[in-house]
Image 1: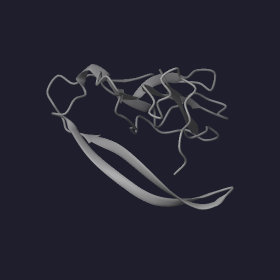
Image 2 (image 1 turned 135 degrees about the vertical axis):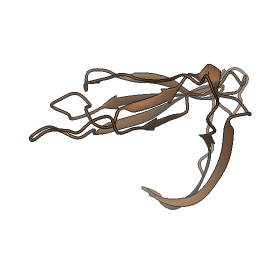
Image 3 (image 1 turned 180 degrees about the vertical axis):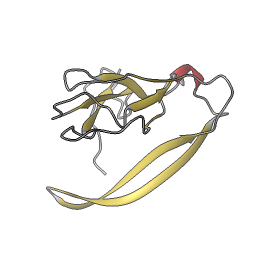
Image 4 (image 1 turned 180 degrees about the horizontal axis):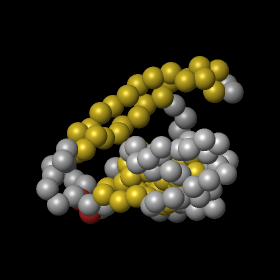
Length: 135
């Protein structure tokens, strides 16, 4: 795993916030079948979090390297708010929280089947990037 070098004044190696930037790509039509669905980050907390850790190897330009990942599943709780944006196009994107050192929540997210694409239409193709902020 690569160490992250921060240019922040405090010099910390841990990001203060991690954002996800998600968008459909290379689609001639809006997302019709599997939209990104996310939970309101105010509804996320220890009482609904089911953490899991992964340790795996992946191929990089430098060869095979080890990686670690901490993620979470979520338990249902009455009153949770979930959202999706219908018919998103490749010209739109979503910005959401993955991680926050202050414990203000994260947007648990997934895809759900909403509909079916028709003849000649594209199924969802998307990309997600992560933005790490240091302060």
